[in-house]
Image (cartoon, rainbow, N blue to C red; front, top):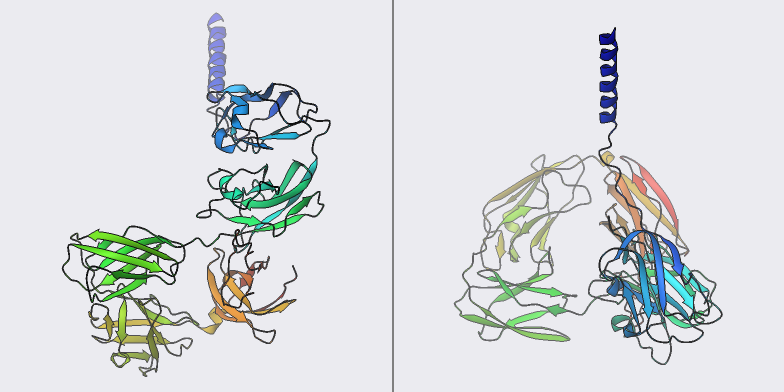
Length: 532
């Protein structure tokens, strides 16, 4: 009997051990919660502040990350007037020591941005403010609004909003080299709200502050601004449109890409660039822009040299470079087709070169359909100097052969093609859909209509000069599309961005909010109201 009891006890113990083993947690979910304030001395929103020390207590150990870049005190206080600890390591509180007397009857805001993070996972406490007043009242004015992208359909997240008082010390340059008095953010939405503001006249700007320095860096940041100063208080909700400025052209040191091709990196718009060699005469050259990168390619016919002295110039820019000779590979002419096996209706056939082209001989090119009937065509070299387009009537449910005989295409270096042949087919009209758009409340023509895919690539474009102009997109592949309308105010055929210093807002755009689904063999009609 004792043996049976002992056996049962052992079984029970092993069962408990097994249950305990299976119940041991192997790790919980990652902490993604930011820290939060549990107490402040003096309390938040204190009035008649006359202390020389502030302590902010948090629910967990925190540390300050890049707070020197992110902390903004408004109105501004000289950094020697206060200190903040701890500046390194973890703590459950932040201590602010005030070393100088503050202005009377003033509401102060210590905006820590996203510099307060928990010690374990680095989760930020977003745009934490500590507010107090040296007077009897806390400034309580506020502004709010919405920030959208002026050109793209998808909005930006984490846009910073900055307010600058317009007083005797104000100048437009403050957004480049000064700090704002007030800071806000949309966080992960498109809405913003700025609180604890003082009555007055302000400039409001919104910036995609990529480097979190509270300044506008036009080379890589987007901006929006109000056309007129804000006189607080205001009750209206504000709408801002974010845009990227066109930066001035600037070139960089050239580099040898191949024996007869030199690259010049650049930023800005390279529309009227000229490049010439100063230390050699009668150099045959051609200038192209790389399709993939911001690089200008200077092609020249090969000759012997030790070094090259270049002058690069535009209407408002000039710079000289010296480049020493270096052995490198040579380019050779390569011709490829723009398609593989299927030519979409409403799409043209072209061949693409890796070197700039100077001539195409249509007498050495033949186009045949599936019945071996010769098809008439036109051909030309595109403006990019690399593509040869063949324009001919493309019919549905047909097969085509393009034969390009030797020496039909000549590049800048007088190289020509070998014999080339491309075969492809077209689909039935029933494989495509049609979209017909109608518009209401267009205030001014022309407007540019973009049909885009979900990556915002422009699939088709139509310019409307009046209500009588049809907006018909035929032979569309089945799929999901979006519509963007550009209001071409200056009638130059393209969308123009804005400029802060010139006080130019970007041209208006309208994004139709509905996704348009195109199906095979369908005709879809959509009416779009362009009322803002």
